[in-house]
Length: 232
Image (cartoon, one colour):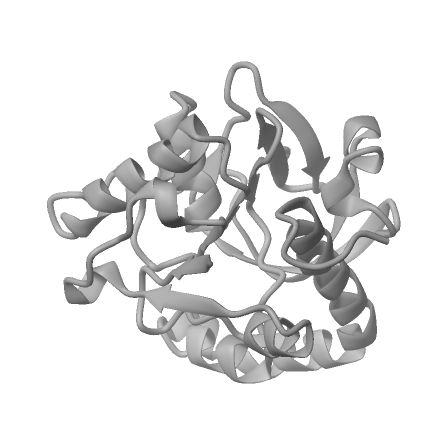
C-alpha cells in the first residue's frame, strides 16, 4: 500500500488526495507527530512524505523526526518508490548525508517557476511536464543534492528544487500538492506573510491551470514508477 507521512497537522495531502481517489489508488496516512507508528519498509509499496513548519534539525522539539528519518532510510535501502515534498525532500537529503541549510538564502514563497535540468527532462518523474513549469514554494530551508544524486530541477532563487537518488527515491523543494485553502492557512502563520495573503491567492489563481497540470502529472508519474497505476 502507498503510505503518506504527514508531519504537521497544517500540511495535509491537499489536491493529491483527490488525484489518488481519481486514480483508484488506496493509501494510508500516518501522522507520527501524534505518536502513530510508521510501518516497516517490507510492507510498503511506495511512500510520500509531506512537508512541515519544522526543520530537519529540529529533533529536540520534534523527536518523531528521528522515526521519519529511519523510515526514509528504510525506503532508500529497499529501493521502495519514495517522494519527499519540501520537508520530506529535505529529510531525504539529510538521511543521505547532504547539507540542509536552516534559514537559507534560497528561501521562496509563492507561485513561482521551476526549470528542469537536462537530466530532469529525461527522468520518468517529469515525463510530460514542460521544461519550465509552475509550482508553489513555501520554504526557508533548502537542501543540496546528495552525493550520488541526480539534480533534476532548479529555480532562479533556489538551485535545489528536485533530485533523484538511486532508481526511485525523489526529493522536491517545491509543493505540488497545495490548494487555495492550504495557501491561506500557511499565509496566516506569520504577520509578514498574512499581509500578503491576497497576493499569494491571486497569483495562485492566475496560474492554477498550469500548476494543476504539472502537479497532477508528477503524481501520476510517481504512481507509474511505483506500479500503482498502469504505464502509459
